[in-house]
Amino acid sequence: MNLVKTDKEIALLIKKEATRQKETIDLIPSENHTSRAVREALGSVLTDKYSEGYPKKRYYQGHKYIDQIEILAEERAKKLFGVPYVNVQPYSGSPANLAVYLATCTPQKDKIMGLSLAFGGHLTHGQPQSSTGQFFKSVLYELDKEGFLDFGAIEKLAQKEKPKIIVCGYTAYPRIIDFKRFGQIADKVGAYLMADISHIAGLIVGRVHQSPVSFAHIITTTTHKTLRGPRGALIMVTEKGLEKNPDLPKKIDSAIIPGLQGGPHDHQTAAIAVALAEASTQEFKNYAAQIVKNAKRLASSLSKAGFDLISGGTDNHLILIDLQNKKANGALAAIALEAAGIVSNKNAVPFDPMPPFYPSGIRIGTPAVTTRGMKEKEMEKIAFWTNEVIEEVKNEKLPTDKAVRVEFMKDFRARITKNKKLLLIAKEVKNLTAKFPLP
Ligand code: DSN
Image (cartoon, rainbow, N blue to C red; front, side, top):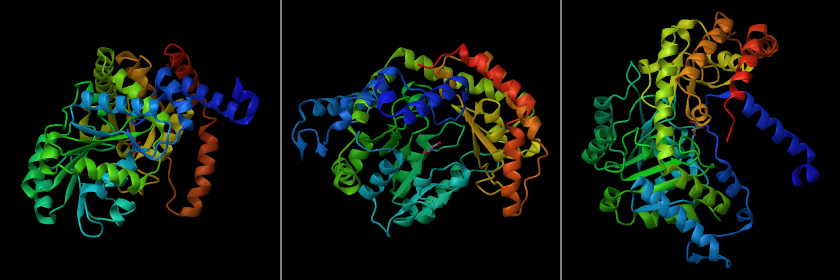
């Protein structure tokens, strides 16, 4: 009510975004729908406070309640993940990862070893385009031809390159991550193992994915993906991490403040605490199990429709589709799917011959649709629609010349948003989503 009075433009745009979310199917595997409780904490007076420092050691006064909130968030995270130390202040995943490198590696000297972006790694895992690959030395591993982690090659590379820190945990890997194997490799070469579980944190606490707690020294995660909290991140140190370096908590705390950040976002901390409480329930475990069941059914239905899935399927919440056999391009497919009310993202596939902005694949996942209550039957319908949409964009020829391509894209967008079949699917999608209200 107040927002409409104060700022009609923003109020209207928020309303439109809410309608967009309500009437479309969100298949972006890193997105989710938070509870009203999480959003209430996020939109509270806590946003008005400055809290530089840590509980009971602040640079400002007025922390009687903020300290209690931060301690609650910490205690809930420690219990949920089974770790002795957590820092709940990182603004998001990228600063969390950078803080870990600052706490463990010497810039321009020590090496980070992560999965290449082109194979599903994250920018902050030492890619040359990211400060993590510029401030530190880095070496990148790749997946095998079938799209799986190749532990033989990873071990060989680690032995040759002697990284200070090995990073596992990915943004486009549809299979179980063998944290135990990674732990053995890290131990063999004397490296830290950092598990970035941003994508699968909700699956781990829901007990449908192995936990890295016994094998990694440090764990980072964003809080807004399968964990279903607000945007934010956690850095955790395990017992194994403390054994290797008892100073890790102190070093990580100083890497966050004063190293990288000033005041933490207290409203975000409170909302994370709420999400952690929600993630401790049996209901959340059921949710995590359903995410995987839905992803598996979506994957098998797509396979039956002739889609080429990287690694042949999925064990987790996401599916990476290579559209080359369908004679379609990922960028065009994602635009067409959106026109049909299905929101996904274009994504490179392993050994992709296309550039990152026009990759050969799309990445989809089930965390958000599962939050809405969709089950296997709806996944079959989504696979059916996806196939129908891709049929509409196959054989579109993406020009190689840049200037011609810009014109082609303009024309393509204009055509595809008027495509009768896609508009019909968008209507059907709207009817379906009406039966699955947002939280
Ligand atoms: N942007 C996130 C994702 O979509 O996977 C990673 O940071």
